[in-house]
Image (cartoon, rainbow, N blue to C red; front, side, top):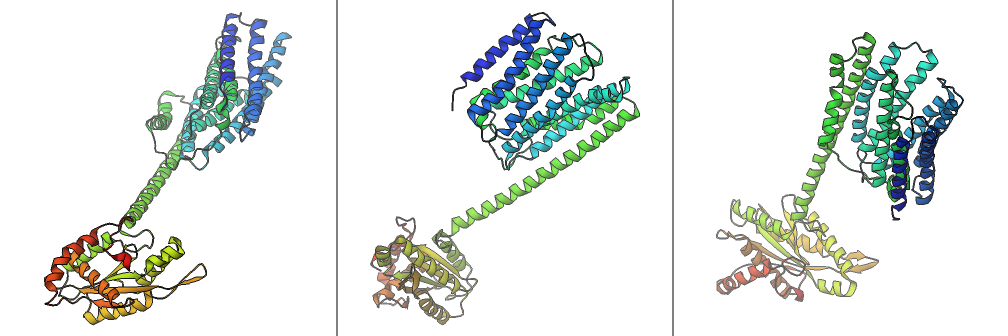
Length: 524
């Protein structure tokens, strides 16, 4: 991004001209020249900045340049009136002054719309609430006094009232600009400062005009000059290029500053009823403004409730997603080893009789060959297909799991007898062992299944799964592609009991993928 040296130089020269304007005599030709020069320079700065930095949307800057140009031409025309000794009201200068407000307002609205994107639209409601409060105040202290205490003709009165209405337009867009999300860049801050300066100057001028205390060339002009200088500096700063970039914000709550502003807006009506005008027409406007404020605040609260409900829904969805990820395998969507172990422990603790629970340990035959020859992508397709078939081959109350690598498990609870589990293993052999189509190729799939039943003395999950693991290796030893039931015998029971702790430790030991795999599984 280019350096902001041009904007800083413009600010320095502008500040020097403001000092010079105050130093020169009130109403002197030099003072008038300085005022017009500063105004014209702001227009030139807006045009040059839009050309040099080439923002994505130039139209807002062009419209704001037209608005400022309208003010400057109005100043020049008024200078001409004074030079010939006239001060007509209304005049063509008033038309030019008033024409500047729509250009500025529409340009700022486009800028706000661009910055807003899909973000904090509640901020616009806040801006509308504060603007409505400002409108009620403006009516009470500026507009109504002109309506009730003037003998102007209808056209002159309409033009007099158009000035505070134009200020209300600027107040609304200024509030909207401040409420938009996004970075407060130097260009943004200078633009906001310029709007604040011109609005403050207009309100002071309106008050002085009512009591006829305004003097052309007084210190009030310093605020108008500051507005010109800040506007031009904002356009000359490199950050003006990103001023219109959208910065969407999903949720914006009411911060302390907004709460104070909204509270002040809500009490505007009641306070004015107490200390404001007592005329019936004045009270009617205050009442209408208060009613509008109430509706806007209600709309803001409805929006906040909607944001809160949406936020709660998103949190619940995230919690459900995290819970699912914690207990499920990310590739196949089956229950993972941790959840399978918990389900088995629960089933053992709540079993009604021995032999009502069966654990099936399922291992794919020669799966390493698939990964080595066809690649891991094809291997993943096989794992997903087997998982889908396992899920479809179990009852609603059964638990299917991917235990790690090419190993799967099935927990059958409340089975009527052992024959049921053996028949289920037979069906799974036929279902899981079907070929898988991948990339136009047919991949042969074989599985070996070990079956183990709980016994009355069995309380350990590791013991049940270790026996199913042993049975699976016995199935592989008998030729693969079959199932085998673990049946402890008197001759081998002692040796098996000695091996069980080692097997259990192997079952729990994680592989490089973070999943447990029995020793010797690569041989399968």
